[in-house]
Length: 146
Image (tube, rainbow, N blue to C red; front, side, top):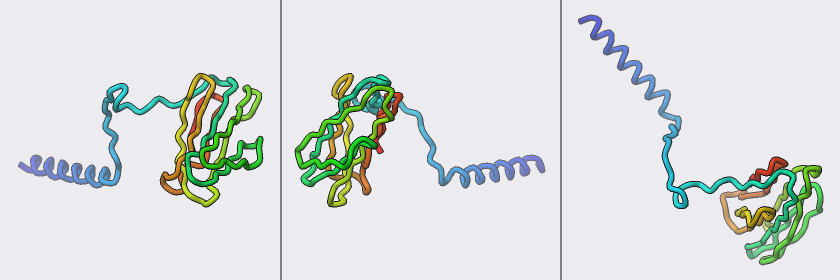
């Protein structure tokens, strides 16, 4: 009888500790997705070293500034305007472009791979402040939105 109550006490204590320790953590639950409907899109990637054409489109009502680091000074893009930038071969550093609204409003960037050598960056109003601020193309071909 003594051993049963001892086991019960240990079991209750263990389960209480587990509940306390896991209370503030998010547990990941594996799931499945249906291709074409609920799966996340694959990450955008290009062949490393390939020459890429980048289009930046202003889909806001305000003026946007952008700068291809470290190649250009700040360039102005008016509403509806498209700017074209290039990323060279593997001898060039990683490509990055930073952008900001001249009124300080948050921007949302959508990156779209138009073809094997074309990347389109569509800048829209919105997003959680401070919004998106840059697109970075690694020399390994991966595209990151920052």
